[in-house]
Image (tube, rainbow, N blue to C red; front, top):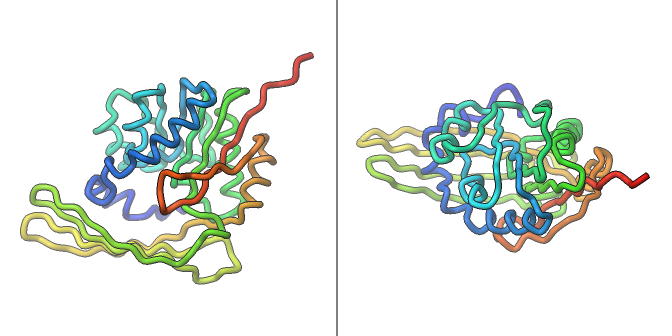
Length: 245
């Protein structure tokens, strides 16, 4: 993510639960939990936790540590996950000096827009994963599955309400970045304002993902994701135990 962080995660962080309610994450969180339980995970690090919506479901089964580059989003996560450890940090450079049974990077991985950034984030996951552990990476799409799209939604809660339009398109199909435009109407009482948040997110071929995962040290595979119609697959990295002798 560039130094010019998206408005969604800075000035609009206090609207997060109306823009992206926790309940919408139940199915995919259950899918992630199954992947981690299959590998006997007990402790977990989430890099790029955002507002803590996935963690809210996972904390019932795992001991979680949450990190995010955005102080404002960590504050939102702490509201609904006050019992969990929260640490501010960039997933490309963070080093906690600890290892976990499992590492999760949800859709925050999409803000890696170059191979260099993606490699750095995957290496951070590897460095924090115990031998015998597992890491799960959840991009919204890969190059093979990306399609331009326009979606909309909104939620009302008390005297506040949000309506938004998401417009995803690709200005240059030859690079590793796609355009993600977020247009919001925010109502508070009788006041209504609009915000345009123009973002860029990464898109990489499946082969690039697998190559970079293997370069940092994981044994990697693609896992079909049945939890949502919006995403076809996730990447799973296994950190192998050292050979005996």
